[in-house]
Length: 119
Picture 1 (cartoon, one colour):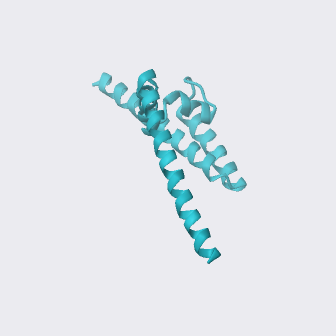
Picture 2 (cartoon, rainbow, N blue to C red):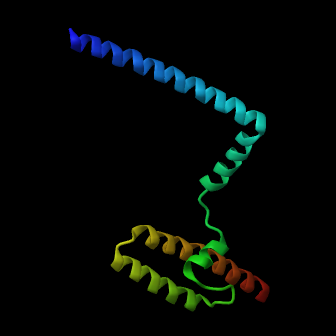
Picture 3 (cartoon, helix red, strand yellow):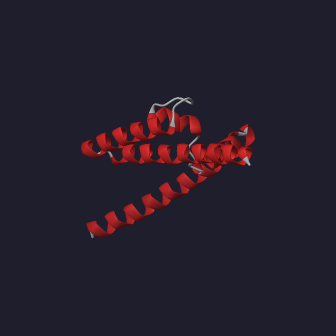
């Protein structure tokens, strides 16, 4: 008997909580649309959702400047990649790898541009 009452209380209580949460969510959406926060949030999510690393961010991760040669970048990449492999930080290791890939695209574009100018 007590178990049945307890089960009914749990079911009714969870129903009340779900309705209250839904009502609060609707109100938050209404408030956000009035203040323009919703549009700003969508723009930020779209920008961060792309997950494209900028050249500046890649240079900061690897600790190189715009004047660094490709050989210096590779040396810095090797050092950082190996040190993170030893310490077991897969996240940092992947960030270092993505930074190298991003700068590789930049330097490949510069090489193609200089070859086009030669011809």
